[in-house]
Picture 1 (cartoon, one colour):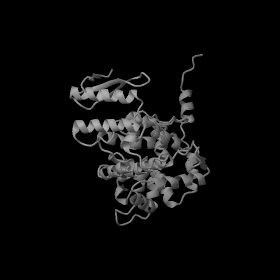
Picture 2 (cartoon, rainbow, N blue to C red):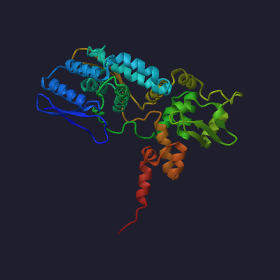
Picture 3 (cartoon, one colour):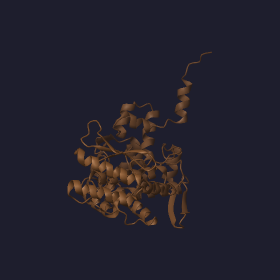
Picture 4 (tube, helix red, strand yellow):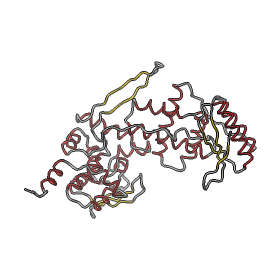
Length: 385
């Protein structure tokens, strides 16, 4: 028999009921009225004990919702909700983040179409849909990218639950995929950097040097202008796009030599890297530049791209592109900078400030101690014999 229970510090009653298999279930009634909560609990138990279809259960919930609130339960398709969510979100976040959300949403809508659920409502999306989407991406994307997409999808459904469009968030208990190996979680070697510079044009050579000696992210490097450069003081001033943190960074001698040979325009707003600057301004993000850098890695013989085509059980194809693991992205220059500073004996607090990390824990994750440094450290240990 259904019963009621109230969580500590909660104003709503929770329905406790049993399904057809004897499982004990709990679900919030979203009401503070005990009488209404009792009726909802009984309806929940009846629906569960009779093994009603998901559609029938939703009909029960919709009927109860209207009886309690005198309003119809919102029914909206996944596609329509995502479009309306974007309209609100675009005023709250950066264009690059919006582009990420749109990419994730596009992938999810494409997946729903492959399982003939293109016009499914938000309330009808189940954990199985989310799991199927995640598993489909796993065959074509790196684990990091799959988990990032899952994170984006969670944000969308979290907003739907907050707005009362859905009762339960189907993404809540879908686990991320397991990441094997470090893949892109290491620094470049100096030999690798020289190989990349050898196949780069002038602009990319400048981008790579700025990335290494300033230790900043690709979009921040691409959008540098001469207004950021102060050769007289030997420093670079910029604001990190991701964190909004204002940085004043010393210009390393090799980078200074590179900047001095460039023609310094009379207009300070002129970009250091015009082509890259135009791409970020147009796209609002640096993904195209990341792809270009990947092509440089291929040209340098450091990475092999593999086109992969898979067939689902229903015969439909998924075409993706996978990268060989083991070689960093442009972001690896940031890790390289942190590692070189560490191995040079620079105090962690100084290196942390130079790279722009907010805390020691994050900074420590970026440091990959090289073999020579470890051998040197081992050699300092005292001899007990």
